Length: 458
Image 1 (cartoon, rainbow, N blue to C red):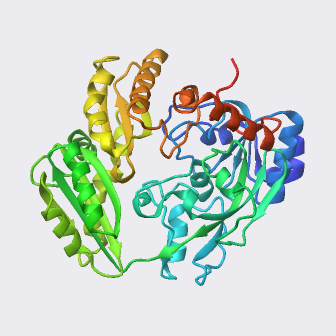
Image 2: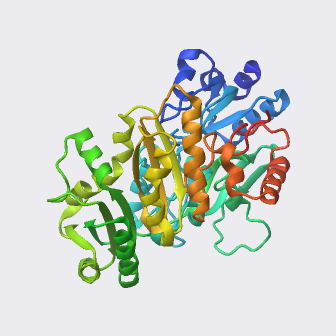
Image 3: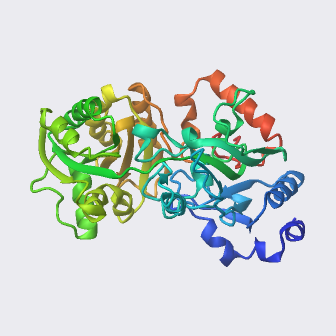
């Protein structure tokens, strides 16, 4: 098999020795690791097709990998699969200013894409803290949401076409960027959020939006999570240009401050914090300030207005964007990315302590996330890392509470390996059967990311 891969890609594009494969075999969290038979680095769609054909013939699993910034173990091998590193697909075509679209390779990093289109007065609406490492292909595979979901939606809403090699070996290529296309199944949309279980995206046609000329950011201290959701409701009704609404709690703000030696962002500590951002072709500062002034439960407010420059905005955002890095310093973390309806979000958060401590009273809880769409990142530290049942029981009870509150067990990182055992909490038997039928049709040999999304047979 290795000889066939070398013949198809060239010796420089096939890594087989342990030292060179090692960086691809462990995920960003350190919680998931495995062994790769080889790592391949194709540069063309035809080479990807050759790799798929070879793996279908030999019945060896394939693991597409971009920036490897996922948190559910979907992008690393388990036992002897071939990792497909897509970072050589790094081209950005000329920006189509008229259509407000651009075609890019799957290996393009989000920050690179954002810089490339900004010179044309445009931007790519999907954005999140891992922008310097995460790739377009990875964000499509996970249907990443990010901080601007509130206004623009997630990755699926930005994709108007893809080029991909399916697990069957068939090639899908639809990159014309036709906005209205009613010619059958939305195959590009199907690949969004499929976690690489159906095929490998090599290029994508993406929708762009105008780059705003004015931006205002406000960090708001509030009395409770319930006050944060009430404030968001009022601000959304008054400020049409609202793009981001991020929730943080006192323990998370304290953790970030201690981890990086930063002073508190506000003069006093608050039970909860709401980070709001609005952007437009006019200054939205007065509209945001007026809306906040009419909200009960709002305490101290720090503002980075249109005239304050990027540095002031960065100071406010760093307390939110560095939560994950700060948690990484605490040892093993059970990371559960979930969505809960806004109407019951405060009740869910308020009940988490009891849910977690009924399993293990020593576990510490850190919750933050995208309040605008109900997406919470539930992080648990201090569990018994040497006991596999400890994390299992925490996942079971937290995810069970999510479903009991009418939520779903994954918001943007996907199911991966972490939540494959829990998918039946969220999906009915008939839904799972339909999903498996799609998988069988597009990946008949089962080579695309075995063990991801659907658990492996026991």
